[in-house]
Length: 609
View 1 (cartoon, helix red, strand yellow):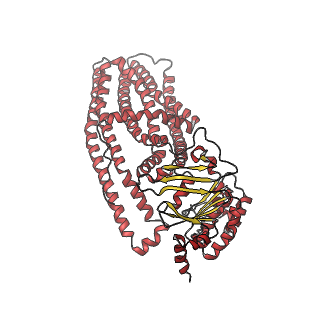
View 2: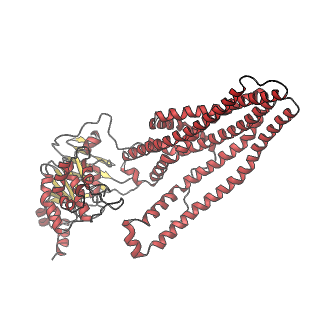
View 3: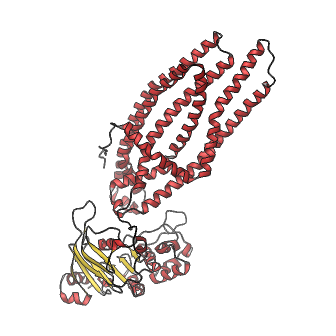
């Protein structure tokens, strides 16, 4: 666990090319920013434009005031508009203060809107991706970085706004310096360039280091959750694992800390050395202007204007270079978000996909279906031929790893076969619209979700778009969840789970009844129950299956269970072994056959004698 993780594909060679390539994602970001709030964008742009032009306006007014004062000391009268100039300078200062506060206000609004908008985009896109994606560690790294972009990239957007403001201010101030001496402006720009290049170099090193550390940071998050969750609390206490987990966390956290400190130290000393060049360029230009004023070549007002213009131009050029470098380097991080949003599921509906049949006439047929999970060479299913007809209840049994749940995932197109095909009413499953097909299937997996929502919402998620109070209550009655809910303080409005205040946790069997209610509320043509009574006691199991006939009446039902008391009610029992059908038939037929099923049944039955 303490092993160092690195990314050998990311090197410093070509770092500038990577930056420039990453900048191509900025238009995509701008579209996302605009979508998050057009009125806010217009407000912040207007304020930044005003704020950018105020410095040159104030220096111009200040020059006129000082020149008038200098002339007054030489015996001339003050110009008639002198006090209006003073008032104008005050007005510009006040306007600048208001514009600065308005920029802060609009930036805060934009940060909230952008974070919300990107978070929704990431959630929505992630929900549409293949199940196989979530079994790939590289995908999890990319997803983690994409999630971070929802909050971290707001700094990049504000940097882009600042660059625009700084460029306008720098250009307006530079025109004054250019009028006095073009070479003075060249010196200022040249003095800033080394610091800009140095900052860019270390920013890229930071990005490369962040890439290398992503898997470690995900492991830290896992250890943090593992060390403080209800699910792991019992074993942590009984097995004495706290010290082990704390030690693992400390080792990895120290590794990241040490790497960050080393990079920060190198950046500190290099940055300090390069910043001396910028400071030297600024004060060299400033000293030259003072010299020209002392020798009488310039007025006080011109000194004031050029001193302010040099200081403002130097600061803005440095900020432009620094901000542009930051944008270019943050664009590298933006690549993670854009590339994540560009990931497309391999399993999706065709453009001309057809709706699922209503009703289903001939059922599902597996023709020589072979399947291996991504990244695994072993076939879970091998040339499987299987049929599920309308109105038929089929039970799948077999030892773990024989392909029972895999058949369910193929029927629901969470995966596609690697060989063979699956037909529905004689048409390949890949020809149907996936969303429409999903609406005709109701699945409760053994590892069903325990939503930290209200009891009503926990049932309604079975078909959230059509669920209403009447349907929810009827579903709860059929699954026996109503008996659980009636004991809750707030009944159907009770918050379930302990994550939020006022929540109530349920036992495994109670949660399972809630999950079964989702199957009833869905009212689909195909019902799939994967170990639906695994957490129920014998009496509850009996009551559930007394009502199971109602759920499956006139429908296809696929049942996976290790309990033979459950599978006996099926019309046909399919025994899987090594990814193939070993035997099939009714309970009575298979017992008389004396094969694999009979042996498993006798083994389980003997434990009750």
